[in-house]
Structures are given as C-alpha cells and as structure tokens.
Length: 109
Image (cartoon, rainbow, N blue to C red; front, top):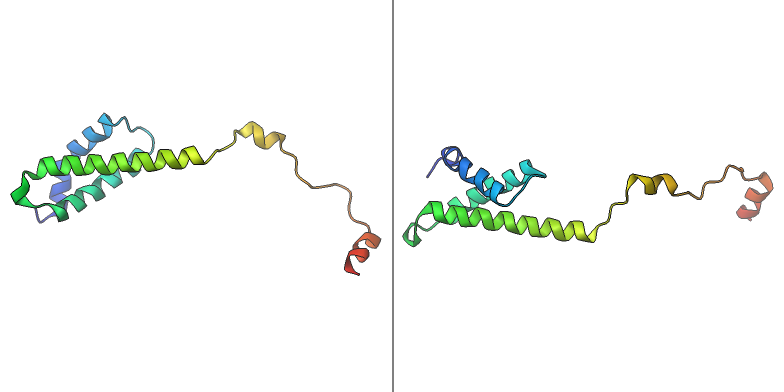
C-alpha cells in the first residue's frame, strides 16, 4: 500500500458507508476530509502481523469520526448563537445627541 491515491480510491466506498452509518449530513466534506486523514494515519500505523488492514482502517476511521463528532457537539453545547430576532431587538449605547464643545473640553481637563 505504497500509493495513497490507490488506497483512497479503494476505501472511498467504505468511508461513505461510515459517514452514512453515523448519520453525518452537516459539514459532510469536512468529515470526509477527517476520514481521509484517518485513513492516512491508519496506513502509517498499521502492523501486518496484527490482522487485516481493512478491519484496522474501518475501526480507526470510525473512531476518529466519532471523536470529531464528540468534540464538535461539546463545542456547540458551550457556545450559544442568538437568533436573528435577538439582533433586531438589541439596542446599542449610541445616542443621536452630539457632545457639546463644553462637555468635550471638560473631559480634557
């Protein structure tokens, strides 16, 4: 398995099946990239005497994707994004009354 491009071509259907089994539909391209990186790491860390590469690659890729899903869900749980209505209701500290020259000079003293 010297050529990674051949490895990607061979294991792309497996990657798509893993993504489908994990019900990944948002940011699919990012997770597919994570799976390809995991495939590359699996290729580097594979020991032939311990079993078949297909089983090792499957479990390694699925583990990486599960780890990524867990990290993203923790991040999203910790960050709250207000709805669009919130930004329409929020008022700023801006005032239409300009500062008078006397008031500005008093600040300079």
